[in-house]
Amino acid sequence: MTPAELYDMLKKVQEPKGYFFNKDKDWVLSILSDLLINKERYGYMSCPCRLAAGFREKDADILCPCQYRPDDVKDYGSCYCNLYVSPEWNEGVIKHQYVPERRPKEKISF
Image 1 (tube, rainbow, N blue to C red):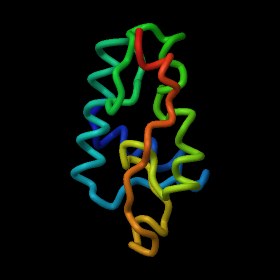
Image 2 (image 1 turned 120 degrees about the horizontal axis):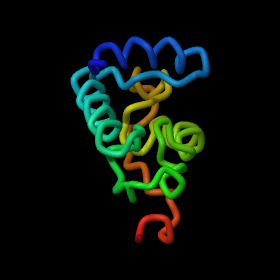
Image 3 (image 1 turned 180 degrees about the vertical axis):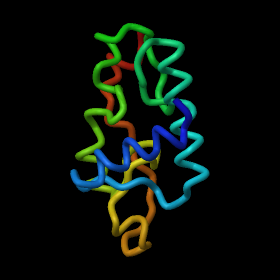
Image 4 (image 1 turned 30 degrees about the vertical axis):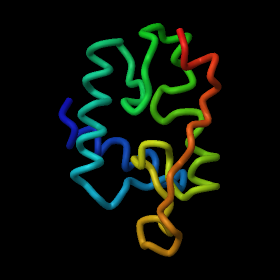
C-alpha cells in the first residue's frame, strides 16, 4: 500500500467520524509513509511521533488513530502529530498551538 492509497482509505473512514486530515497534504503523506514503515517494522501502525516499544500490547494506546486523538482534537483542534485536525483548525478559525503529550510517562519508558 502506498501513502496515497492509505490517505484515500482513511479519509473515507475518518471524515464521517469528524476527523479530517491536516490541509498540508505533504505533511499528511509523510506521516502516512511513516505509519506504513512502522507497520513493516512492528506489524502495526503505531504513531510515528512517539517511540514504540515494538510490542502491540504495550503500544495499544498509540496505534493510529491513537486513544489520545479525541481529547487532543477536542481541546486543541489537532492530534499530537497534526495528522488529524478539526475543520476549524484547517480553516485557521482556532489558533494552532502545541499539543502536549498525554501518554503517561510509565508507557513512554520501557
